Image (cartoon, rainbow, N blue to C red; front, side, top):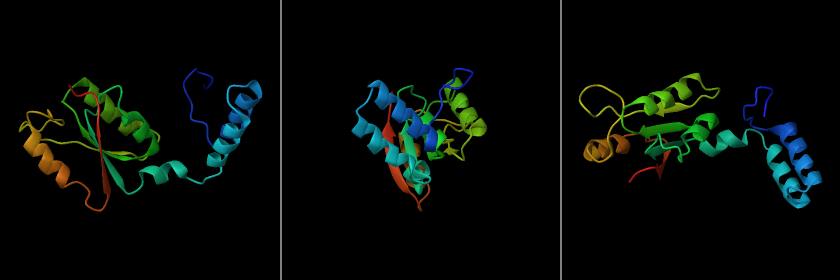
Amino acid sequence: HDEKGKNMVAKGEMMKQQLSKWAEYGCIETSAAESASKIADLEDCHSSLVKDKVFVLLGATSAMGPAEVLIQLGATIAAVARPGKKLAALEEMVKNGPSKATMLLPQVGGDGAAGADLIRHAPELARWIAGLCPEKKTCYLQFGLS
């Protein structure tokens, strides 16, 4: 946590120091700390996880979904969710976030509003998704749909 109590992402030396502290305290095995420390040595490992991919999130505003993490990693996200406050909050997160994340939103309802209902707009969404970023690998993820 930082001085304001917010969660932080540990990288590089900061990550190695935290892993060492956990190993000394006994929270994790020394071998686990050593293995995880190798990740800290990788240059830009996080962005390579999302590079050249578009993540299609069905139920993008679900609390169980990976949208926030993908935004922090700078991913390209195709967010399928119903219009409303949750989708607007997700848009703000991308807009004000520290990364270079991109969020693509369908506008299939005819009123020009971003967002769509997965059941009601299934054919339009299928066409929209099929035409997304042909130069990138597409990863489909579904969350919070009942």
